[in-house]
Length: 257
Image 1 (cartoon, rainbow, N blue to C red):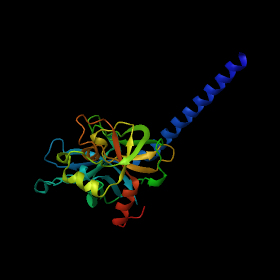
Image 2 (image 1 turned 120 degrees about the vertical axis):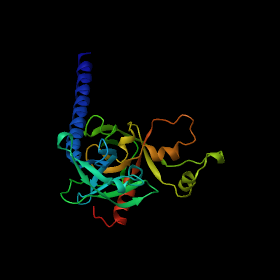
Image 3 (image 1 turned 30 degrees about the vertical axis):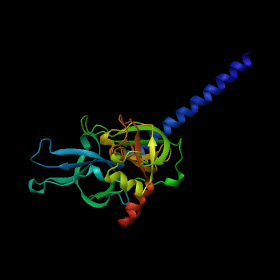
Image 4 (image 1 turned 90 degrees about the vertical axis):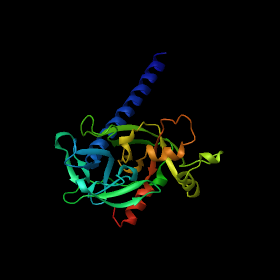
């Protein structure tokens, strides 16, 4: 009996040790990638507040380029009143607003590339879509509620719970719209995650817990409009665009990564 109890205790201690190791690994990864996370915003001196946070982005390439969702960017800037696109670099009191410009857009996969001039930001490393498996532990870092509580990126952790098509065939033709027809004509897979993201998380990098390599980009809003349109009560599922489309975006813009 004593031998059984000791064996159980040993197993529990090993399990606890593994848990502590995983937690330490994520903490180290967050510390490494956090400087790469930026807020994507617009700025207008005559507006109060002058800076409006639209979503999240992350540094790629040489550190002066950032990936985000296309729907995060404003459709039109009020240039007459000097509204500009910008990114927020840094956190808390040290956060700085830096002017940005649009470089490349991929409307099909809802991705955008923007750039700043001057001092670069540490860039994240791109992973590979084909290496992602259901059950992989991931995390994503961004601004889930904008700058309501200050400019402090928040990290959520979960797993890749499914890899599935961005759109599913519908039975009723009235449920079809132009966007869904386009998706059905040119389908691609997305990652379904079991961690909850919010609108401000749009554009957040999804990365492997241990390596910090980017495997996808959070897309809470745009994908749901296509994938869950026919549901009467849409779920709280979070989706991510696979990193292969980020790689293609950078290649199209001739940006080394």
